[in-house]
Amino acid sequence: MQLHSQPHVPPETVPVLALDGVTKTFPGVTALSEVTLGLFPGQVTALVGENGAGKSTVVKILTGIYQPDGGAIRVDGEKTDFPTAQAAANAGITAIHQETVLFDELTVAENIFLGHAPRGRFGLIDWTAMTQDATRILRSIGAEIDPDHRLRDLGIANKHLVAIARALSIDARVVIMDEPTAALSHKEIEELYELVNTLKAQGKAILFISHKFDEIFRIADRYTVFRDGQFVGDGMIEDITEAELVKMMVGRDVSQIFPDRDSTIGDDVLTVENMSHPTEFADISFTLRKGEILGFYGLVGAGRSEFMQALFGITRPSGGTVSMGGTPVTVLSPADAVANGIVYVPEDRGKQGAITSLPIFQNVTLPSLSKTSRNGFLKMAEEFKLAREYTQRLDLRAASLDTHVGNLSGGNQQKVVIAKWLATQPKVIILDEPTKGIDIGSKAAVHDFMAELAAQGLAVIMVSSEIPEVLGMSDRIIVMREGRIAAELSGADLTPETLVRHAAGI
Image (cartoon, rainbow, N blue to C red):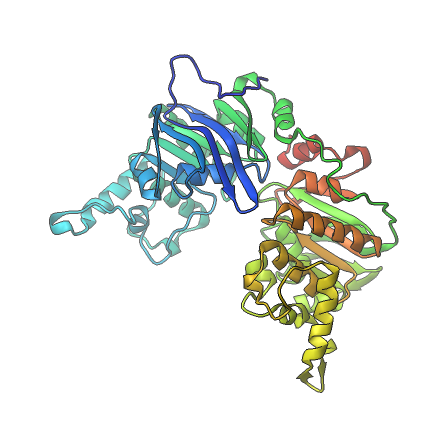
């Protein structure tokens, strides 16, 4: 393994595309700090790092969605900039995203050439040329898809191939693949590998982002590792082992960051046995105890959030049982879950966790209207009293409880959602990515409060993609991979390397 303060550059080779000391900041967050990256013709560079390492920000800078605050973008060694996504496309940079926006009501050809359709006389779209060009591109990637078919009539895998064809419809020199295999079957993944080899043979530089180590070591020529928005090291993939790459990804001390907890674990509160879903997860079984924080860790597509939504009654599982305190319960809806003492703080608080157009006090009391109403009429004084009690416990910062949630910071929005569910006095609280997108101070407040909840006897499930967080807060950790439990870890087994190995299937 080699660690470099500067990118590892082969002699006499200039990257097609490079980042040179690039920095990108957002309010309260440094997403990238003087990072370097080089993409070379005819080679696949794997960009490796845990969630939050800065990979998505890099993709957005390379494709003109974000502009760097410092450093330089270089094309063939010459400094340049991409003020728009179109500027990046004009430079021959294209991206295939995990979740590509396509339009079901348009044809395959129209989706491929949306925004840059071939033109004929008088600037009108040349429909014949567009169909022919779409057919040629689809055939080049082995896709037997009729370009005149509506996209809505295709399956997920074929839609993904259309997204790839769209990315290749410009004369690309650089192809960025961001988790490209997440929605593909084994056969379709093999076909994608063949496509990657075809692109390499054409001399294209490829940036490949994946959490799957088997993919990285199979198709990558080079690696670059980011950690916490910083460049850690790079080199040739043949010169590094999986174990060394894992250590580069997670090499940090997570102690002294999280609250000290003297855990007093009580009786079993929640027991889940063999819960399954037709497409998202299978055979999930575990027990959660009073006063315990049980962490759920996994990589993209592991099925953690999908399982939590089923446990809360948002989606319907195909099998399995749930018991509270040893008594079987039926959870067919969120109302059933709340009635049985299970609440869920979702990852997407803006869309699923809060009604941002309503004030704080109404959001907090929404699931507890029976406590704040008399004879079918709401009592505003009772609403304010209940909201004040729980927002004060969370140290919510707002001008007043009349403030609309949409006007709060991300951290304070998260506190509103947590306060809303705590007001129902639950037995189990599920926190899905509880500190995602919030500043360091608010993270610390949420962590402290989680510790306080557990100390008071509440059973806590925490889903987190941040290794330091899940290690620093959990008594036990369940690692999920591809919809199943890959490991249940506690004690001396709770290490970053162990988590990543089980999550990645190493």
